[in-house]
Amino acid sequence: MDGWIAPLLDKASGRLQALERVGLFPSELRVAAAMFERLDRTCGRRISADGELIVLGTTVVADPLLAADDFTLAP
Image 1 (cartoon, rainbow, N blue to C red):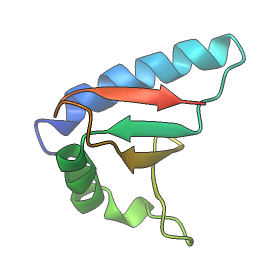
Image 2: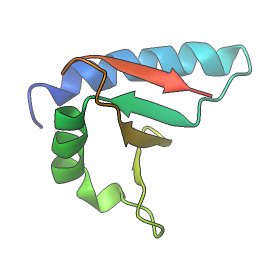
Image 3: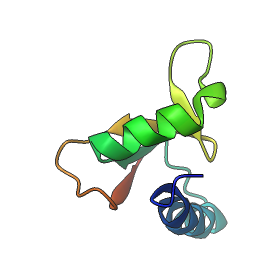
Image 4: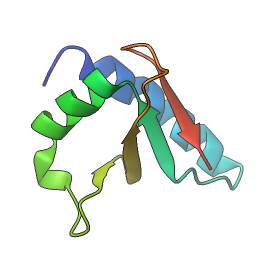
């Protein structure tokens, strides 16, 4: 796995678990465009029938305003 992806997924999964424990279930994981491309290449088999990239059970969306190693979770 790409060395940039693992730390991002570790952080995102921890935040997702914390939110789920309090009953919140984000629908989007927003990442930098370069990270989106890496996830798409690495996790391409996880693309759903409607073309969305799904990682950690959440739709991944490219956000041009985010730094390469940053992410946000959207409701």
